[in-house]
Amino acid sequence: MAVRNLGRNRIRTALAALGVLIGVFAIASLGIFGNVLALSADAELGGIGDQVIVTPNEDTGTNSLTVRDVDAIARATGGDGSAVALRTDNALISASGGQTLGQVYGTDTPGILFTAAAGTIPDRHRQGAIVGAAVADELNLDVGSAIEVAGARYRVIAILESEEQISPVSPNNAVVLPESAIGGRTYDQVVVQADSGAAATAIADRIRTQLNAREERVSVFELSSLLATIDEFFSLLNRFLLGIAGISLVVAGVSIFNVMLMSTNERKQEIGVLRAVGVHKADVLRVLLAEAALLGVVGGFFGAVLAGLAAIGLVFISPIGFDVVFVASNGLYLLGAFAFGVLICLISGAYPAYKAATLRPVEALRG
Amino acid sequence: MNQTSPLGSPSPAPELRRQAIALESVVKRYETGGETVEALSGVDLTVQTGEFVSIVGPSGSGKSTMLNLLGLLDTPTRGTVRLRGRDVTELSDRERTRARKASIGFVFQDFHLLETLTAMENVTMPTMFDRDRDATDRAIELLSRVGLADRTDHTPNELSGGQKQRVAIARSLINEPEIVLADEPTGNLDRDTGATILEEFRHICDGGVSVIAVTHDELVSEYADRTIELIDGVISRDK
Image (cartoon, rainbow over all chains, first blue to last red; front, side, top):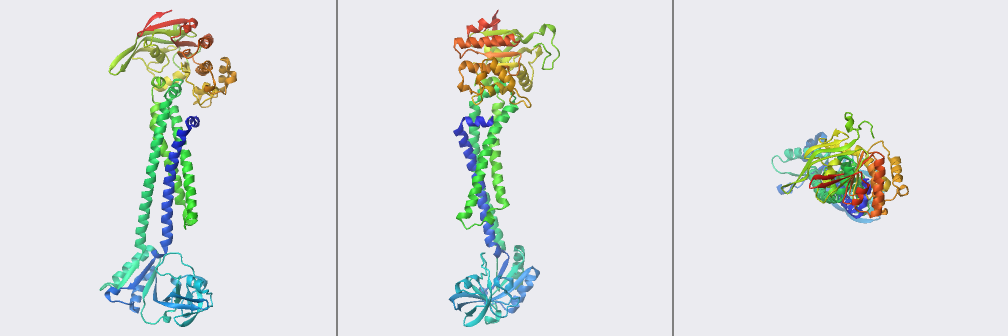
């Protein structure tokens, strides 16, 4: 009966359903987009969240980190992670396939920071070169190839995985050599690989208090607290987007209110007849609410479907992967937007329905 | 029609046994714009089972008010309404709706059929919200009784005025009421069609159902057992 009543004024019904559709679509798609944005940012930035970079503070005249500094950092790190001291340099890297300018890292324990795609990274790095993905690609290197770095010859013992994440120590354009390959007794930076973001924050605090007690000897750079701020920003952004979408659904609710009010007004006499022939108030109310709910269900369903399609479409037009689109929290947005759409319809249908159902039959019949 | 009351009230006294509906010293006042209008000023009326009563009178004489009171659509300011001897004046809205459904059928001047429903669905409409009840068989019987057996699947806009009114009559009878109330039943019909509708009412009365028609149409009185004339809220003639 509700279906047929809605069928009576098709254009008006369609427009009302369209209003709900747009509202639900807006909520679901903006919610999902915001969520996807936050998730992919998390995935991109995840790697820097658990690293602490310690560099000498040149403002106070410190140009390098001594062995004592490195030991102090290692003590401050404790069991929460591992500290890797690095010497860095820029050098011309050449092989039979050509030559390129790249970063050179000198460390004895590269296994803590880097992962090999081919070959193996030894526990103690004594000889040979570990080559970043971009360098290997450019110079056509394989495990076993010979390269020349700043005039010295090395054999390639491993090639690193291409690193997609933003990271303070990017290995893609680098060659990792044993510590002794780069001259000097001091280090240019210490990278602490912490077990978690929270551990990184704690380690950074300890390093600051222990090494910078008298003067600011070192700069401590850690992104875990920054990451928390970024997360906060994204959740704020998401709420903001949802707020905008919510407004559009409220507008849709008002249009449904109007549709229901008009259609019950038009049907006053008809409702009077229903009441006269012995249909109870509750039944009249139920039919009218069913109409409102139907608008909400149909509009909400198509709105949610469209939002789902839009989210899938996002994968094709942007560098976002399926892994951040097909997550439970996005499904929750779809479901939530749909439920909210139906709820708005019921709320805005309730008053006109109640008003029509409780009209005295005599007045309703008079029209 | 002489079974015990379906409303579960005590058996009516013998002299009331044939009484379908009655108004006793009924007064109805309306407040309109701060002014009190007395639509009915002390009306007594008893309609017997199977009686065809027509109510006539000039506009504003209180005819419609009287019909609304008889149809339990409205309550009197003073006085008593009795349905088969039972005082129904003070019933709650819910009880009144139930009593209306059980005992009273309505026929309107504008037919008031639901445009979206077929003739058949319009006839069964009063039973639409009853669970476990299929009134289809009775609807078919009623529609063939009013000569519309071949029109069951037509919607109101595919029917003529006379046919619509006959669908409305079938609808008014679906719940086997004791009383059918008609508000200008021939008002929108030509004379010949009106006559067939009135004949239909006669058949209904022969089946033991009372028909009360409010009308301007003198033709109705020719078919009625009794004609009551209302003027200024009082019965001025009853014959």
